[in-house]
Image 1 (cartoon, one colour):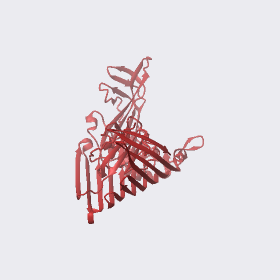
Image 2 (cartoon, helix red, strand yellow):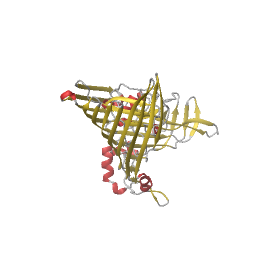
Image 3 (tube, rainbow, N blue to C red):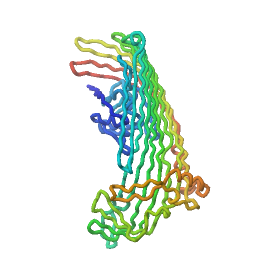
Image 4 (cartoon, rainbow, N blue to C red):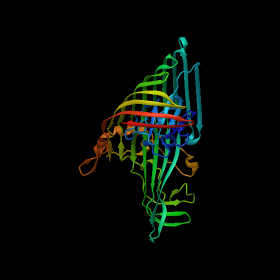
Length: 493
């Protein structure tokens, strides 16, 4: 017996993953606070399927098949359907379950909807967010046969995160005593300025109350932009430990890096088809084209030539916020003591185009007092995906380029409520200008092994193009017994 479970969710003004994550048996994998991938009934994200108006949507990412759902704004959605069981008329890949996002269509009455949302958080000297969306729809003509619905949404999120990442480990004191201590710590500052916008439209024409032609489209763009500044503390060798205080020798060091997030992810889909209910026979057919792509990634500059000969003490009286303090007077946040040793640029593009066609015929019947439906259908889907990666690495410049030359005016004196200190941070526009002016001083093709080019080692394995073609057909019978249904089916794929 098969009991498909369909849950319809009311939506908040957020990305689609956060909306679906409110449903029973659905959890989220989050990325910096936002819902990213769905996990249905405890299965991993790649075992679930995501569709828009029943159409498979290609992933904008290069290394996964599942959809990164923070690309999709929930304001374009009329409802979400979650099916947690398999049936013959569904694709074979959703072992965990299937999520279908249904966009809005015109109703019998004219519709106008406008929403706005604003917010503020005091973290990092104040960060703002705002969001706007609206939709308008109406039916026209004699008998209101023609329907049109259009919706749009925009949101901007200046998310900020203070983040410390200690690395717990074990080691030995000079006496040979084994101890547990923090072997290193990152002092991180994340500052995002994410933009998400999209449009959805629906057209339909009723030949009769039982026969409809339709066309639906959706477009969404997510610019996951931001800066990340990271100071890394390596304390050296432990000497003593007592009362939550660990002392170290003077072999500690500091490093700094700055990377910017520049992924621009886009999803679009268009479908057209018809539905004809001919008394005892239901006919459906549809053709769809979908495309996704992603540009950019994480451009990184390493200032790994930092202060050395530092003697630290470690205070773990608050185990959630370990505190390293300098004991020998070294200014670990002197920007003149940090210099660039490596630069990585990003030139990456992933794109996938998917064509899909399907048709089905269902026949209703009765056996005594029991209602039944016999359905036959087929689907064909062809997807072409390619990924191009040319991320050049530049290393070991002969010109000294220090952090003091590229400083940003941004400071955060209340980092972790003042319990920890964030050093001066860089402005990435200044970094790019400085690196470009001295590009000839870098080693442009560093070697990572005997005769192995680091650039080729990192980039060549990720260049690919491929085609996936799925042809499927199915037979399915459903018969009702009171409040229960018995469903049997056979699928070829």
